[in-house]
Length: 285
Image 1: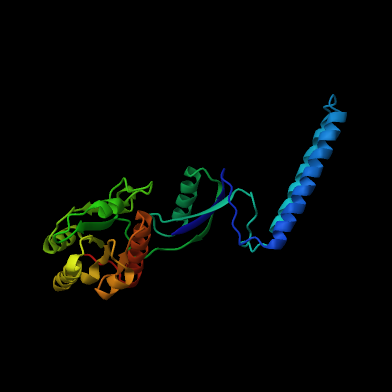
Image 2 (image 1 turned 30 degrees about the vertical axis):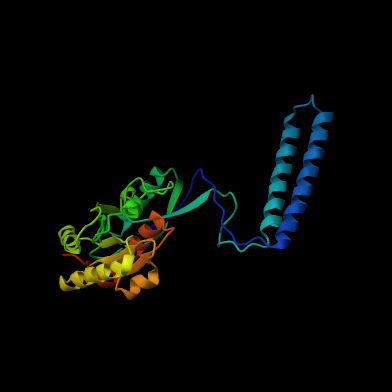
């Protein structure tokens, strides 16, 4: 894994909450800015026919001094990251390359950052991911199981289109998605997970009459345990009456309820699968 910094076209700033004193400083700075603009306009009006370089240099110096004052006044009460300066054009990126740690990997990182449009890229930190690391896509198998015929929520999370402008897991190159659709028997889902060497199983449960979903979800856990797969997959359930606490109680790793976005699930899966890979090694031979 490499962490690099370089200078690019975008400008970023990070900081904490602006205090009341900082707001006062901003107001004072804006007042000075307006005063300087008025003074400069008057000066230009009086000498509108003069375009000597000396005046242009004077305005440029005034602008530079003004920006320094603004930066000092506006940010003196903020807690900023070490080395951060507003509008300095420096960005930091982190990524993983399929190259053994060493000089070659660092040069590959610099080349990758140049392709991102960064100038003067530097590798700030580099470390080996692990001896058995792999960059293969994370395999996710999803289904609405039992008699549940509702796939709207499942499709919103898995399908490329997603919903409300939020792309589903199919849009992420890090995932290989197998959407089995609705009314999938638990036995069929488990068989597909084994065949695909799934890293994660996503189950959607919308029908909850007489708590039929509880029996169905419990049955899936029991089948995975009987097949020796429970510890090899991240098991997730979602639905309108699903909570994280309920999911944990039923033997699942996580539960997602109403309002869940595809990126919420993607982030959880990526982090949990990576954690298990580091702690337990590859889960599938």
